[in-house]
Image (tube, rainbow, N blue to C red):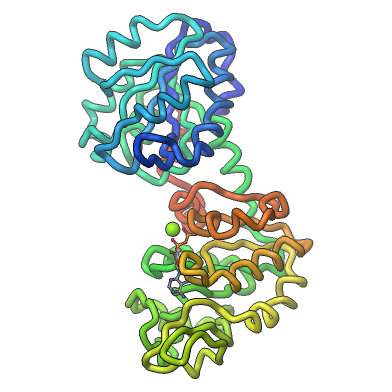
Length: 372
Ligand code: ADP
Ligand code: MG
């Protein structure tokens, strides 16, 4: 993969920079500019080289407009917005930019052809520029036109943020023994591939959060009215001696909130967190580990069941292990603990991180490695 750092002498060249500007927007205002701020490094690098920069991004809402992002970003860099993607207006705007100027195109997912990786659409997009830079690692698990189509056509490079994620996550693919992976969160179906890979690479795999409920159920335990995904794979994985389940859980039901053995859940109770005693039991493994990977909250933190996740975050942050942590909800659940800089690497890539760890690569990485 070529790095954006290798770009020299590109004054006047048109660079299509694929970003992830998918920030949360409420009433046309950006509520958390984190993703936009992180994109600045690659933009400013290209501007400093006096390239003509074309910004392309998606919003997860395929009908949402990037205008709020434009309003925010134009306070940081001189910027024009074009309410078009690869049509006549976009072409005209791109022809008009001067050296060191930047234009932002409209939400690329407004075009159906983006998700389909339509060849004609990819060519239209590519014809806007001379060079392609992908700095959208969090979108690079998608085989979309702006991720895998354009690098087939233009000379392509990885941006700073993209390279940071690859560098930060890669050590998790070859953990140092003794190693521990911790997976929580919900929807086991989205994490089966990840857990299967982790079982091959890590010495122990601790399962918490709602996905532990699937394992409890497979064990024949009563899980009451707990959230379960219904994936049948838990039973198969249960046979693997590397799997560790929490012994104690926090439930809520007619008897109120209580910490009990996972095998003693009532039919009218819901498991909403792992109990502190489960973290205590895990503590000695955490202390002995040299590599720790963690994805997924241990409980329903939105409803106030934060104790298990907080205790786990503190235990990992206090250990001397190399620690890699990530996941959209994992980050929201630990953000206010003030521990972010206590982990070796914190990924902000969400689903792309899960796929990268499960498969060791992403469609967007493979596309950059083909080298046009
Ligand atoms: P991430 O985004 O970090 O990968 P997930 O999206 O897999 O995490 O899971 C996060 C969700 O899991 C949160 O909404 C949280 O409330 C939920 N969750 C975790 N444990 C439980 C539980 N025991 N019962 C219900 N929901 C849970
Ligand atoms: Mg999530």
